[in-house]
Figure 1 (cartoon, rainbow, N blue to C red):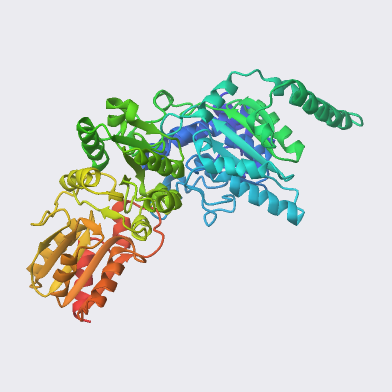
Figure 2: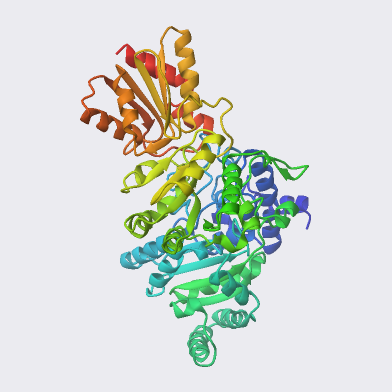
Length: 626
């Protein structure tokens, strides 16, 4: 059936016309296949325009359709692990007309958000959380007497995270309607590593014993009078027999019924497997195999490159991934240079080798490079182990993901006084990925750890200097935090050292650090043109604050601190307390971020939180006149 004939015959089953997701269950298989084509075309057209996660969503088109055919959302709850692969889910739950605004200010989020739709069961943006959330939902259903299901959709990359196993360990003990769909595409952001990846690889080659089992059960289940009782007896008998004569899967050992592997692009097979999973009414794990980037040749060939993309040219099929330097690549290349002369240096990543610039280290020194999978907690304690034996571990991690390892930083590294370096990528505003990914909480989190040293370079030269000092001069736990992307066009270097730079001027001091220093410098120039002289104090070592920094600030009548971090527990708040203790009597104002920041471009996010040069000028003028 051609697409034209399909639309003519079906009438109201296109994405734009049909009632979603209610009418999906009534579609024929040919209609489903054409709908999947339409979805893939829309994904490619939209995501290559707005940017976002392309390959992962192309890989789950049929799986998402089957989920909404077999489950009654939002009464049944579907929880998407990480959530970057939920674009198809958004399309199938009535958000087609808003989809062109994906990840744009005021438009759809790139991740599930319950405030956006009742079909988004749980907010997700970080890995390996879905099983725990779905387990809680399923138990709530059981307590309340609800017959509905909680479904966790988890990628094989997320299955390398420890919280995934914590969820399985507890979920398998229940007798609730919990279903875990393991989406196995053999490719996370970086290549999957470790025993879990090897285990899944072995399972992919296993015979489809379960397929025959559920096919028989389905036929018997449709047979009047005697079918269902026989199916029930057969199910129990086969399960018992398998326990006695066959090696069970890891998932069955944890209390789950295991079904699979299932072809994740065969809608009939998916329908059948999910229907059987529902029939057990106990924890079930459905192992689904998919192809990341399915239906778009460049993404199929390079799924890692097309995992998360900026806007790209569909005709050239080439993401606009700059080969120019950025903070991440400068960090990665400098670490290679340092490691050449110091064989104690090791590099660690949590499945983000390319995102953090460690691909250079991996190629140069593979024996000293460690990708631990999506397991930030393990990564930090692992680094602690390396440090106890005299090595110098450098853990490169996104700011938002470092939040997951706070206890390990405090308990396993800081208390013992171990020397470890954190390369904190994506510090500050990251833009379109929104609340779950903005790197605005690492400063309050880290500065609460005793004896830590935190650097926030404003440009590449400072990044290199901070990294060298952190690796070879500092002791204990230290962190170098830097933003996503390139250094500002105008970098204020001042006349200072690795701790700070100071340009005297007037009776008003503007204090900042990191990327925002360029905005502050531009604002100071504009204020000077308007007859308002301001001094500038740019911090590079942001914690602990040097005594000299406080002495400089005390000399000014007005001190205004601008910070690309959450206000509570930020450096500005800490500086205010320290100045007060030293008897400062002038005016002090702190302009920072208040809570979560919704998705928009980096520029618009900075504007919304009042940290552009223009807004800094207004802030200074308003408070001088107050």
